[in-house]
Length: 253
Image 1 (spheres, helix red, strand yellow):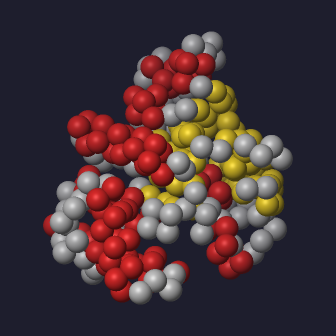
Image 2 (image 1 turned 180 degrees about the vertical axis):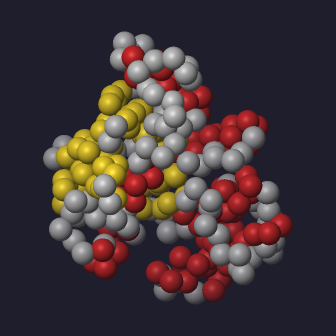
């Protein structure tokens, strides 16, 4: 496997009952930069992400992380792989009974031997990075949707992972907050020098933040390339999706 490929997915299949969600996915995520996986809602983008991080196992196919074939590993033996990832879940997945500080500190307490002072310094550093200085004592119920996402991101980067996964980071946010989150993703990229994978159906945001864009359609990666290549594609399915037209080969239920 090429040294500049951090995540490689080959011929990935996954079905739920009689529904084939992933039907031969091939995807390469190069080191550094941001790869955005686009596609319609419910098409299987989040399922793909859960396979990459080891929360699900495929029916068929292989996944390599940093050159290691992780497919044969039982889910319980994936901890050393998961430590390479930070993940911002779609709803931020904060612990409602914990304040902001404790939410961000949670992975540090669980997975490191840092003392109280070191944890406090690390939490404040991550909150500063996402623009939430002074929010340590707030409860999740007091936070706006955008603030919840930023707390979730601070927790995702608490252990300084080399790869950050974002599952629909702008879903449910207004256009101004969407732009705020997009800029934050780009800032993480610049300041932390990480590899980012973003799952999204937000085309405007994908073109803004992506170094590479891949479209998942009918269980496979339909196309993959730079934003410029995707914009100029002749593929009618891709063109219909990125222009948001109801007319075309994609059937609207």
